[in-house]
Length: 228
Image (cartoon, rainbow, N blue to C red; front, side, top):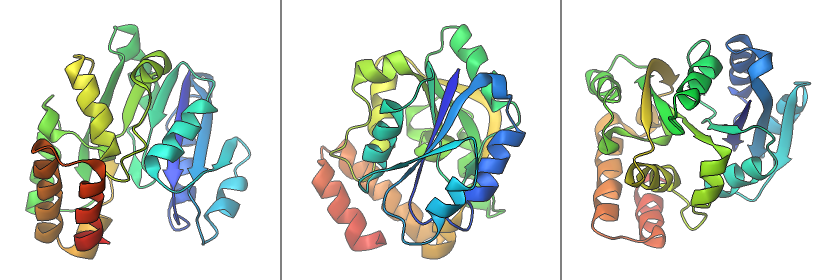
């Protein structure tokens, strides 16, 4: 069964929509639990989550890696499915994930599209269908067997940003990654906030700096300077 883990911080505008979407597009027999891990919201996100009877709310220190690790620690499923609060997986995503695990694919994601018609974002989404490491990111969601997740050691909590890619890199190094050819839709809200080209440039710089050997503190300092 699958444990769905969603880290949140001030997601009152959309968290109810996501939780409803997850229930409507999966079979209850496949879902062990939905765990929402709040990292210190100051809006009414927690109250909204608590209004859903079949959703477990956990309180964590701020930081997606810490939040997702805490969710994994309290999970009971044999498959973990990490999902951003503004990403909506395809219909029957649970069966699609279980099918891959049954075939021996212990980790992977869906291909992705943004909720935007900007030509660049459409192009970025189109590229996610290929199983290339450079085309990966947390917005595509991440499924992984609990056994493999614990073997790796979970998300690296030293990383305030880029934590998704650190785990993904480890999976690619182990040749344990598959892209399911169904589409998850994710929000382009950060691109709308900062501008498509500005955000893409800074994301590219963060990726490049990491490739050059930048550590977690250096990556966060760059992010904080340019995007916070």
